[in-house]
Length: 172
Image 1: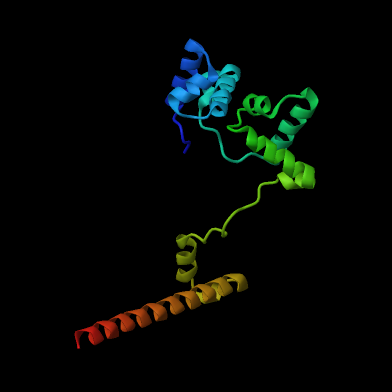
Image 2: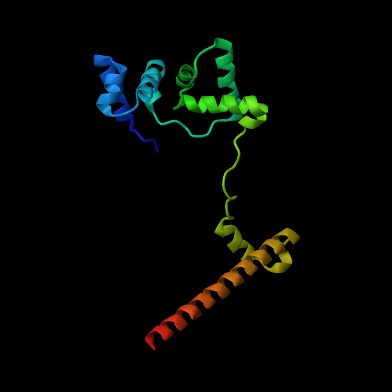
């Protein structure tokens, strides 16, 4: 979710178009003049659609296309960001930095965080099937799941006993 709504951005741009003065409009709405400039440029190039929230992830080929556009036409980061409807010029600057340090491979998106857990329905289906019908990998996954489930239940029981003992000791 973006920090500013599309309506707010449009209101800022309309105020600028009506009265001019980038810094005055920024001061009026209590936002940075750089942000106002980005919205104005996006509005000039793309109309109201330029103020819509943007997708967060970009492909490496798209990033490379933006960097090639900057080199070919010798445009500023601000203009390139507005031209390609990228929310912030600092995003383009970061792509430039990554490309200069590691080439096209550095522009590839890397998965963040832990890998997703398997869906419960997969596990339920695995547990429902008889062991004789399962492949070696499926048997290993089933055994691993059952080990984790068993350890969880043991820990839960130990915590329940610990809580029960603590409440007994308090009552004495």
